[in-house]
Image (tube, rainbow, N blue to C red; front, side, top):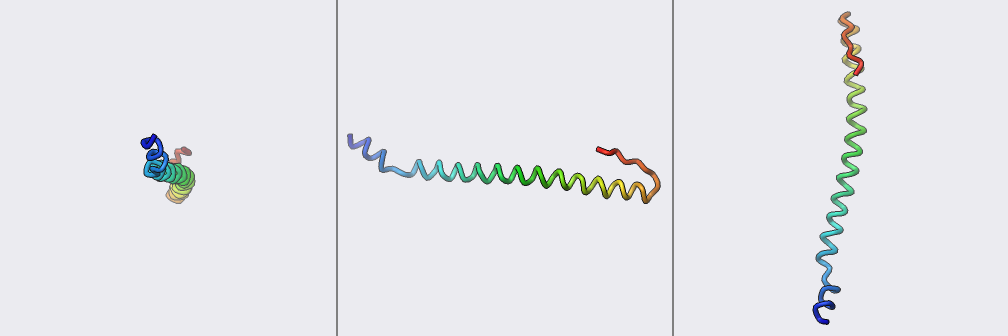
Length: 64
């Protein structure tokens, strides 16, 4: 019976789980932000590459 009371009072495991959940939430948010930023960045670089190709007169855009 004392073992059960001791386990119920022990909050170290709960704290570790909370930190784990916070870390997971931060990771999910970071992945989402990086995915969005990556798409925007790819579009920006593609626009720059297209403009440079047009200025050089080569027109070798991949359109990817």
